[in-house]
Length: 84
Image (cartoon, rainbow, N blue to C red; front, side):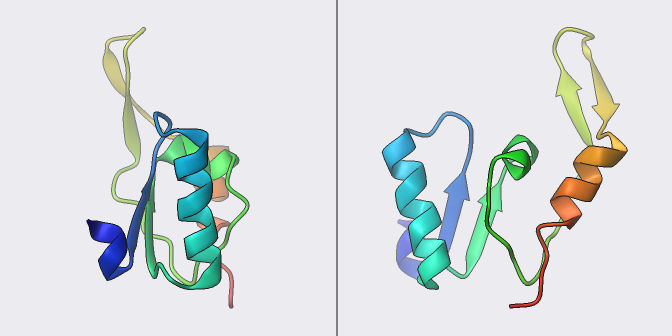
């Protein structure tokens, strides 16, 4: 399990109690790396020393094509980086 080595994952399909556990472990410092989907950047109230954005596009099924993240989405993700 990746939690044992200090890595946590957050995504939309997680159960609420699992998500709370991962967030609490990260806040306590037990998890040093937290990987999240871009949508959750609007819901999370946690900060990181470093934020890495691995792509600037997402697939939109209704348009059947990849679309760029909006500027507010990018700023929200970048804004998660704060000095600890």
